[in-house]
Length: 108
Length: 114
Image (cartoon, rainbow over all chains, first blue to last red; front, side, top):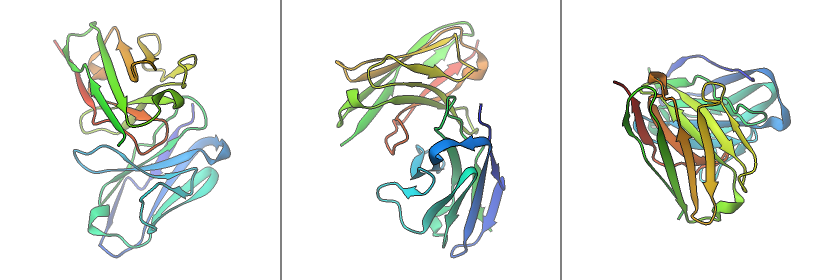
């Protein structure tokens, strides 16, 4: 089973700042089958990034994904008020298709 | 418009069973792999199970293997999750989702408690 570790657990930032979220896998995620989701309280998860770096339809270009192998990063270039949420990475390279524990981005 | 509507959740005693359904519309259901994902209250997302487009290949998280069964009826555009031998730790909102996509249902709450 591929275990995903996300860091930091909580990121406290101000609107306009840059956010860098890390997702590390216990073994290589083949073909960069890594996705990022955003979830706000009481809402369904929203797909942001798939294939490690491809933005999903309608996702603003301030969100970008990068990485390969075991190290992946989600970057939010300038935080907007609506970006404060929990972010999860998920690998869909091999079953079980595990999620990371999440990074909460909150207002400093 | 893509819609995924889960149903079948509720309160069940430990050891009991429930069958969740996910009615799909607005896309060619029979062409897509489907997943179940759950989220315990206040906790993170946990992948539960996956089924391929024609229902011939399935996979499960270790925590539910042997107790849960995923299936689908492409004629009815419906995904299922049969849950047996339920435990308190299965308490969660269960979401159906099109594989690695923006399309998720709103979820159905399963509570396992005596």
